[in-house]
Length: 329
Ligand SMILES: Cc1cc2nc3c(=O)[nH]c(=O)nc-3n(C[C@H](O)[C@H](O)[C@H](O)COP(=O)(O)O)c2cc1C
Image 1 (spheres, rainbow, N blue to C red):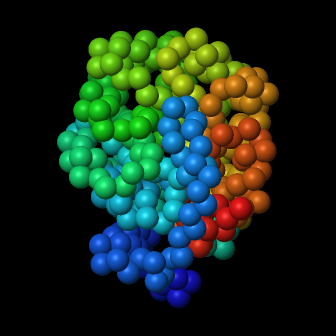
Image 2: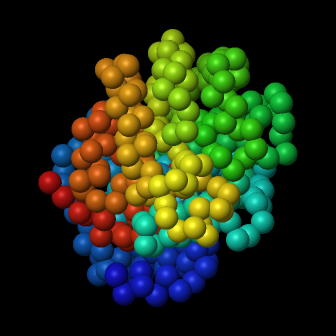
């Protein structure tokens, strides 16, 4: 596997992403995946927030935006998968280049801007899935939607995916869709939550709903969000998305790239947010994400108060071996 990872470093990041996931799909469909990846099945199934998990490690949103690789990723041993972010309409996202891998510092900067094939396409993939594990869908707003239309975009996605998913994540924290993070402002978030509550009542959605937050907000803002969540139908928080702060990387060229930073330089910042949320509220469900590159990092998230943990950058940089390393007892 490491040999393939080295080869992939030669290609532009988006192309490498596509080759690796399509190769994974091929290996899965031809039943060859076991040769390259010795899947560990530790049968300690447990139930959390009404969902059944084999382990606490999942994929973070963005890895499989359109749900094209659900069965293949599921076969690697993850306890759950989060697909998306999906928007109602397909969109190209920002101009390329827009993903920058920093192998030396175990990090990625991306300014993709919710490139995806639209919710109808994802729905077809959700209908086709064979994977029996937990699948969540992360939903967002189209760039072209402004004002109240943004909220309608979330509602449209809920309407389309609710019967096919185990949970839904409302993403208000991508730094690459202009003003999306304004949903961290109290009045805006309240309006969004009220609208979501109406919609889930209308479609009778009783499964968990998570809100994915930014690591760049102050503790006061996060406290306000925790209070709002506690008095709402939102189940819990995903902490965190990428950061726009580049002070933790030393590569001067990359420091100047716009976009969200993920991977090792985000680890402490996002884990501190988990600790802060947990200290404010002992029983709020938290999915921790940001910078997990090893089992130790995973345990730090759990010890900070995460109920479940997701990875993206660690999986891209270290490869599937990281999954087994983490979930092995
Ligand atoms: C290339 C790339 C694309 C991403 N796309 C999304 C996305 O569509 N929606 C989302 O909520 N988060 C997205 N993320 C953020 C990840 O889900 C995760 O929150 C963040 O990368 C921190 O985790 P990590 O350090 O393990 O990568 C993306 C991250 C990367 C690197």
